[in-house]
Length: 94
Image 1: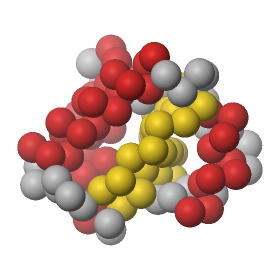
Image 2: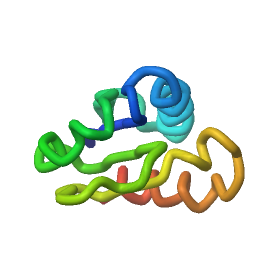
Image 3: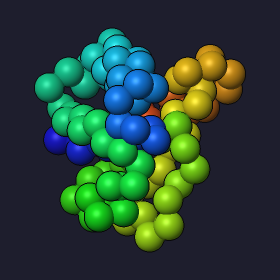
Image 4: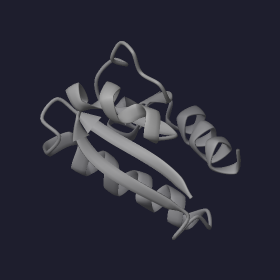
């Protein structure tokens, strides 16, 4: 079971869009039921990160992060989406 944080500035708007896209990618690649996603404000990430495998955020990686980081921007724009999707699927296999 992979634990994923999805963050944006407020923890509401863009993180919801990213969350849905991540679920679609994971579910369509056979990972349904093998992950847990928590939507947060990016300011919460450092304190929570020790208990999570990955942070996917629309902002820059916050300092003192204790899990892997992926930019969520490609999930919003579609630009350079494949490398981020590939890395997400690699992390699911680790």
